[in-house]
Length: 291
Image (tube, rainbow, N blue to C red):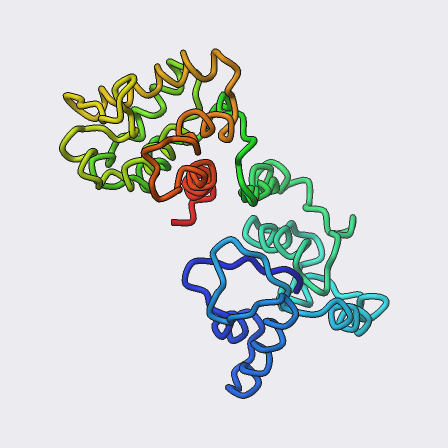
């Protein structure tokens, strides 16, 4: 076992107990400390979803590999599963499925010998079952997305966006996809801006002004008032297309430098410099689906 990715609800004690199958409390505690030191974790309670950690040192993993026999014993699948195969019969479909699964995971059988090919009589009946569709692992986005091209199309669904939206933003995943098609701006990027500017649809401006984009009147520090949230989203996407993308501002960082400038005199708390980082964070939440 090598790298392990932290999942929702994980802690080091649980990982050692369940993944390494260590049940003794003192042994678990010892292994937790070992893993923390191996991964330079200062606080054993401070791990986050999506993080990769090593469960064994490289030398320990090598020792485990060296303990494996040089050659595997010659065991037929009939021996492994206690299945008595008549000499002149063909493999039933259920057995073939077990054989397929076993071919990649069993310690006794790494490849299916030619002698075990299904009898011709069974070829037609098991043709569809013989094809095992590989499971694709979802890519995990790590690091910041400051240089992400906001013109990149999001290929996900409205539901995948909706599950992360709150307050007055709830149920507007389809709207973000609609704006993506209309203005050529990534739907997740649009959603992340509103989540950042409105504290995910909960600020006073979002609830009372329908302003979820932090949009102000020109030459003023006053926030715009909209008739509804969709009107604000339409205005925001149009603004980004005309005054940002069309002028070469096509990454998260480049948009942030103008959308929320550090030199803004109204930024008394000095938080504008974190705009790109925060938008990047919300984007990764949706893309990696870690909420």
